[in-house]
Image (cartoon, rainbow, N blue to C red; front, top):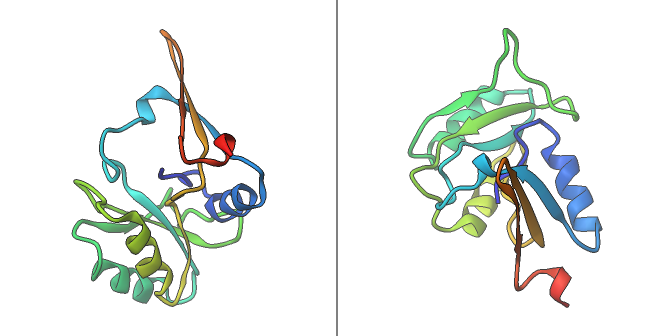
Length: 139
């Protein structure tokens, strides 16, 4: 699961890890067949963010770009978001998350691996609920 496009990914992950379960509600257009079809948000410190970006670029086969809207997009923690194109797929999200978090300046990664227990997808045609069979809801 990739989350954090809105700039609260560190806080979302803290809450998710502190909760008994995590249920995500999303528009069905966000569902993809392969992890990595959307850019992966990576929260980085503003200090020397370009050096952090360059280190991430060594791992990322696609573009790594600062999210801007006339000025750099600032997260709830006062950090920047780098949108990283790891597509067409992310085959080993656990290793990728560890590799990114080992880079000085990276605060958090928008990969929510093993945290999400259910996803509720809404569309004009109705609602689809996907349950993670190994998640905390089944314990």
